[in-house]
Length: 337
Image 1 (tube, helix red, strand yellow):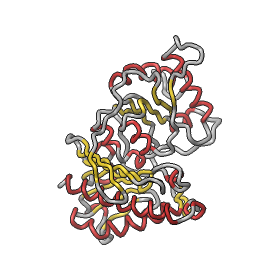
Image 2 (cartoon, one colour; image 1 turned 180 degrees about the vertical axis):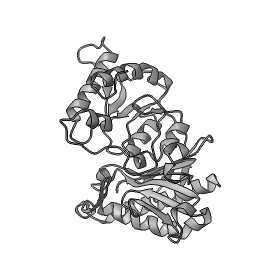
Image 3 (tube, one colour; image 1 turned 60 degrees about the vertical axis):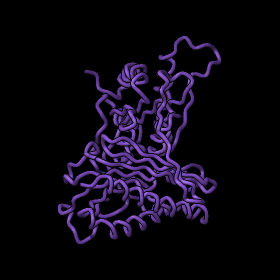
């Protein structure tokens, strides 16, 4: 497989969607863009998502043949959210398997509040058992708000590192930059958070975070701000913030919370397509695990629950992980041995 060429293809698709969505944000009111188009098995599809789907289908029909056929896994597209391109090919006859979130962060973008991201990862088609760990190239493309004139594109090929550039939306000029996750060895005074941007479960997740920070720094003085949080309603956005050195620790353990808290209704959770750009974070040296401290992996599908924990570097992992997992055990999110 020509992974550099596939990487280039995914970037082209991501930027086509970003331009299309950005134009919609600039020219269409949020009331229209935020209308519910359909409700899929994994998430709500809004009108702005539907516009992106149309771009994807046309793009894949035009280009998929040169890669030996593509199986696409994406919410709201195809039967059971899986489809093949060109459409004459069976899933088994396709060489490439792509998992994608066309607009990760729809809710923030459609109200013109904050950037969303196109996320995609490509692997050799190994059938239904293909997983995130099989991904050989991944991209994330920023979809900016109407007042922004710059947008970032990040990509990686396995074992070959990361490429990143910032694009001027007015001139189309691209300026390369270097990805630099935080090198701080502690959370104190930095951004760190447990994802809790949807109810239910906010109270329980806030309590876990409170126990973590107070347990890490029992010597804190009255009035000291130990850390800040940023509830970015986008998994891609969260990964972007830790990639850019802005956040030091992020955890999303909502699936484990809902499984353990029988009194709670089940809320929205992270799915594998939200982690389509996982490879980029791994290539940057960010430590990302599942809730049991294993390297993060999941099937390439749209429905499996994903718990994930990200540490900006090894020192942050050493500081935070032992206490965090003890707290998760005490709250019943991890089974005791």
